[in-house]
Image 1: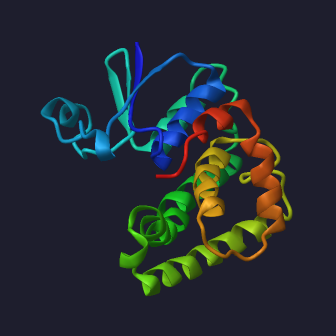
Image 2: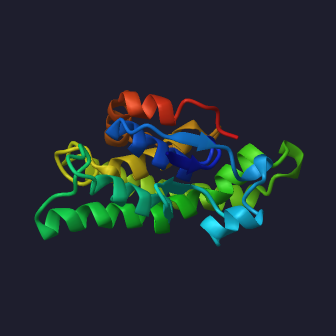
Length: 206
């Protein structure tokens, strides 16, 4: 039995769902994190000592960290998300996975939290604006990059598109003014129509 722990509205869980759906692998998802709790229970901490989501269980094998799960899925035999054979194209995928995790998503955190999870009268407006400015810088970088390539890491869809795509999905659906990014929007609209993306990104942002 393959089991994915994590609530469907978590951006990191969405990455794992998208990857599993791309491969057509059967799995059971169990709610954990946020209002569902579970992540503080000893049985869950035995799987993931960080107390975070997602966590993937597969025949006694346990893996956490969403981008590690994506890399694992890419390495499955016959995976449609297979990593490039050559070191440099493979490094490009890693580069964008790391950029999503260390730069783009962290820059958006205050915007998301304040606009989605904090009541309107209690929002920290300077924090929202600072976060918006940082995220716009990342969006501009990505838009410029996508002017010369079909997908994030090259001419083929990859796990980098999944990781960055989940983050961009949040950015484009926040109730906040954004600069026009035609290349980013073109790319996002294309990947968001993939059947696996429709499953992963179906729920509201909460």
